[in-house]
Length: 446
Length: 116
Image 1: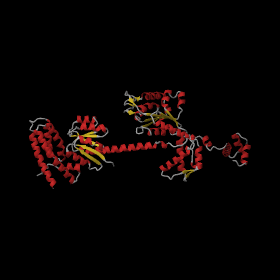
Image 2: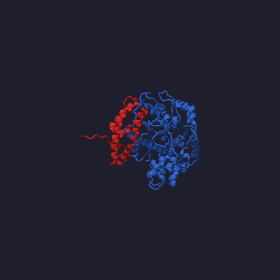
Image 3: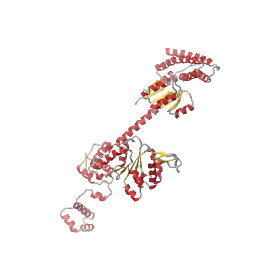
């Protein structure tokens, strides 16, 4: 554990020494004892984690020392230790920025001890939060958006543009193309990375709740509003607000959103206070918003305000070899996460992957690959390990991209099997001559 | 007959632990600082500088509590109250003399402790 640096500023050498020795019983505490305010200020370059300041010092008052300390170190906790049990003085000092006020008695040492532990714990939590933020940042690093196709390279180009300013970004693309991943990549690579990223799935919030969800509400604003609630706009203040499926927002709420964006301020439901907002907005939709405007389902003025920098995420089926690139990446990730030996993917399996249209895009590919890794018994994933769960049977049928004569053969074979090799019935069902089927049977085509 | 204790080291040990060397060092600091403070207090009284006297007695008061010197603590509080009155007619000298006598008694006992 890192050492905790504490300054004790105490003009009574006996009492100061006593506190110093007590707090040094924990070897992680690095305690400095100063006899007056001047010495304390002169040693601030040592950057203490806490200052315990006697209120009645010979040169400067505890209040004056605290003020001087807070000029250079505004967040440094300063505890005033005073022999006087004066509530007014204590309250005044707390108002002026003292972290706490201790009356000098036999419990002072324990209070300081506990406070140090509390601050250590707080510091640990802050470090953990920072580490987690960095980890999240790494997770949403641009390197984690995979692909080499021209379509995805164009997306990268636009992403880098989005980082240089706070322009509203509108991301569109089919389901599963990674709209939220892109929104997070923009946030966690921007100057706002350390501030909150707040996502709202507009489609998932009932119409009657969306306003209070977005703007928050005051206590008593409506039945059940027993406490004040901070809305998503406020939560995302200084950070990024991501409105997923914006195309699903109803017209009434669209008007309120437009006003909030124009004025850069909101009011909580049931409240009168105007709250300034400073959140970057990223929206996404899988609808064609321009078309929704034409149909009257989306406000034109809001559409133009939200359009900002449009990023269109290409469907996976148009990304060519990115499918294989992503498949290999998902295989490696899944094997790593599950402590499995790395697997390869056979040529035939690759061909099969390339032929499928992926209506669920990257999300679907990931699921298909993970299942394939689980099903595969060998070091190489084979074509039969690849299973698509597309409910569209026509798509499934066409996936092999056969010639027309091969499809003819498969269809006739299917009908013969279905009707117990009754050639006449199969021919009737397919509206073809029975001689066609007989000829194919004779030639061993079916 | 129960022997009257002028002080004990229980609270002191709560501060510095059971290490006898640490206890002795702290006692030595007490022996070094308190006589100087007493002299200053007497000087402040002589100069009728009640403000300084108040601050000084107020500052050293917690030290007596660390040694559980109850009688001395009580006298220190009394002097503190009298100093606050800013009045030379309140026999503060009498209290300071008594206080000094008590202190000297305790200091010599503590010196003996150090010799052991």
